[in-house]
Image (cartoon, rainbow, N blue to C red):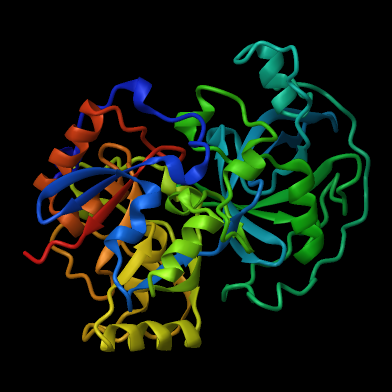
Amino acid sequence: MRTADFDFDLPDDHIALRPAEPRDSARLMVVRDGELEDRIIRDLPDFLRPGDALVFNDTRVIPARLSGVRERVGPDDESLTVAVEATLHHRDAPDVWSAFMKPGKRIKAGDRIRFTAPLPLEGVEEGSPEANRRRAGGWGGGRESQKLARRAPSGDGLSPSPHHPQPAFTPTPTPPPSRGRGSMCSLGQLDATVVDKGVDGLVTLRFDLAGPMLDEAIRDVGVMPLPPYIAAKRAEDDRDRSDYQTMFAHWDGSVAAPTAGLHFTPALMGAIRARGVSTHAVTLHVGAGTFLPVKADDTADHKMHCEWGEVSTDTAAALNAARAAGGRIVCVGTTSLRLLESATMPEGEIRPFHGDTAIFITPGYRFRAADVLMTNFHLPKSTLFMLVSAFAGLEVMKAAYAHAVAEGYRFYSYGDGSLLFRSLT
């Protein structure tokens, strides 16, 4: 199909910059059998049945946007520096992350990157050169000279999380010691070496810290990776550290929130369980690729980036039992749906899953696991709008989104929700 088939008009003022308060007061559009109904999130239990199984993503967003400088040694042993920004995408090893970096053209293998904590923005005009300088940790960018200290290389090898071992990876040879290589996250600094730069825009970073020490350092110097359509309108702030996490958030690893889960509250979960609905957690660490536009004219030419996920043996067994007893699988968000579909065999059996998935769902896909999907409103021509169009029907979703625009629904991560019943045609 053509990517243009998934385009629609969206006024800029429909983008939500903050979540609804309380969270379950957001609006909910119900799409069932081609019919639309306007409700609110706390009405969700009305559409569930005893025996249904609600599946949510318990990933936790990390402060995955890092700012700093690229250091490169010049002909006179000086450091040639350029301000850079990295959005972490996928953890490849205890000390290695793949990331999207800006400006990508100024990065090459062997470069040293020093990330620093951003400076406060109070009293600084948003979008000004000073605001940009502070976000880069005080570096102004451009070509600067600074003599480099020579430091010994640090050790690596701390073990990954006991609950979530790191995904399988092919070890990259440790680069030789370079000028400036050090084991450092002191005074709000974190150092890394560019190991590789892929044709798909991903840069491989080997940090000077590993395992839990690296996790702590990222928390110290990183900021919450707000989606570009929010970050372009306002700066990240302390409120986003809580607003951009779901109540289910448990296992660190995502660089974007599973946003359908943002609507849930303890009171809503209590009402759902009182309805006789079971609740189950899966984990998909959402990567930065979720923010990338589809550039290919034909959807068949689009490449999805891998994300790591896990469906436990107990969860797979419970969901299979629920379906066998006549219950429906209700996915909270496209992340839990994509993971379950990746874990489900063609005949419909959900298997335990532990690894990467790059599943890309477009119209024509035959769903194996999900019966109902709760999700937010997505970008035009995005992979997620393609997914919901596959789930409920392209023309139905175009009509639903036109209704949402006309009725003032709030879009994207902090916006309102929709409840979609799978099309049987």
